[in-house]
Length: 98
Length: 478
Ligand SMILES: Cc1cc2nc3c(=O)[nH]c(=O)nc-3n(C[C@H](O)[C@H](O)[C@H](O)COP(=O)(O)OP(=O)(O)OC[C@H]3O[C@@H](n4cnc5c(N)ncnc54)[C@H](O)[C@@H]3O)c2cc1C
Ligand code: FES
Image (cartoon, rainbow over all chains, first blue to last red; front, top):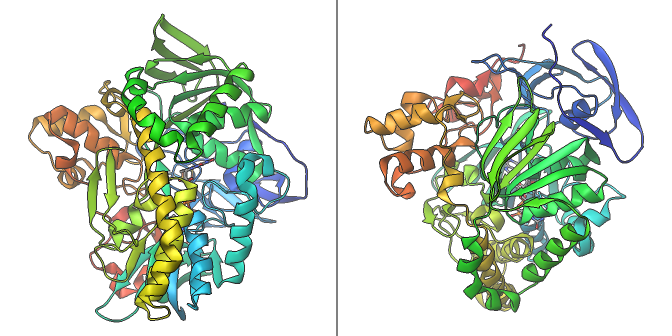
């Protein structure tokens, strides 16, 4: 697997119920109800696709469903937008080339 | 699957769509509201349904909550669904094709109200595709929707009320703001000055803006004005931000750069539905042609709120009410006299709000030097990684129509369908040709509006014409 770049850090202001998701095989505890993009950012993980041309790692950019930089394979379905998809118990997510 | 038929279908659960829903119900129409977000509120009230963050919406929180609560009683709400196509045959109902977790469905409606709001104007500079560059609206969405804030130094850069608001909201949420780089040209204030008095007496925007500036000063956020030549440096991610201002070049170490250059109407659904657009020099940008009731060039299809031209949340609410009342009149639920009586206060308010918008538009008008990246290596199309230089080469070769440029270079052909790069590419080509931006045209939109699994498309033969581009199709199993 490629080295994960040092993406910007985020933290959450509130505390509440959580769910477990699986990102590329690793179990993560994340706040319930937030978007997958937000959840991955909280873990310092790149919430984004791998550029099809340059092979470079992208990260969620607009977070409102416009740019498609957050495109991922979610629960086995490719080309889904992590910024518009709320996390749910047992959800799986993988980066994809797009 | 085909759902029930409705009198009115509304796309977009922001202030425009929510207010329209409530009014339509009052007039006796059956309605459905569709939004791709998992909750209601639109952009400005994103996250309003979750408790504990009311301070983010200021004095608007109360009416926003009422709007959401009323809309929920007014008809069917379909959140978490994206509208990916709109088809309309002769006198039959309008078919609104939606995709959600349960697959694709079709909603039938006699009238359609597009209330899809606005998107942020692209701000392209060397390094803007690096992880660590995010839009102001995006960072605000993380805060409103997930209570997630940046940890570590943040630099904000660009121009417009939203940038200032987000700077303040982040600071109040405990983020460390290293600098606010204001790119608004000094000349803008002078040009906007004649519009100030009329704006100040028309609404609260000017006063709110002043309050915002004072709060930013009180929070001791370091502000740099007249900023140009922004660059994000870094190998794989942002490591530092460099820029020029009155006293020379400066550099800040930071991992997050938040950018903003104003907002533009989201015309994706309008163009898909075949509504005609016009050039609005005050933005500058393309806006759908609508009459004062929200009717477009396509019969049965209406547009309200920021999707019809930037007016802000209060305008959007009034415009939503007007459009719903007009739909009720067209469907015979209320008389024209009743319509005019109901919407007179809304129309009067919209007129006043228009005066403050004129001032804001002029004050934050983005100059060409910010809309056109000078460095040839700067990426324009984030999806297909097409650079400014490649576009300028097309312009030099005489290709000057945006859809032609797209066909040759693939700029705007990726999954985002030019949502981000469309206006940027037009600005670059116009600048290179020395032509007016409006002469370059705007990108045509083809169905599906967002990528759709192949099996969904196969089940819907009508959507497949004209044939969609490969980037929008995929098979479900990777
Ligand atoms: C990211 C962002 C943040 C903003 N924050 C503020 C703020 O804090 N304060 C402020 O005064 N103004 C803000 N604005 C300006 C904003 O445009 C208006 O204030 C207001 O939200 C406009 O209301 P509206 O009803 O026209 O549309 P919006 O509130 O933008 O709502 C449009 C809705 O349509 C939905 N939608 C769009 N396309 C589709 C589709 N194809 N299928 C299904 N659903 C769709 C979207 O998910 C969205 O929820 C913001 C704008 C943006 C882009
Ligand atoms: S981050 Fe832009 S579409 Fe999700």
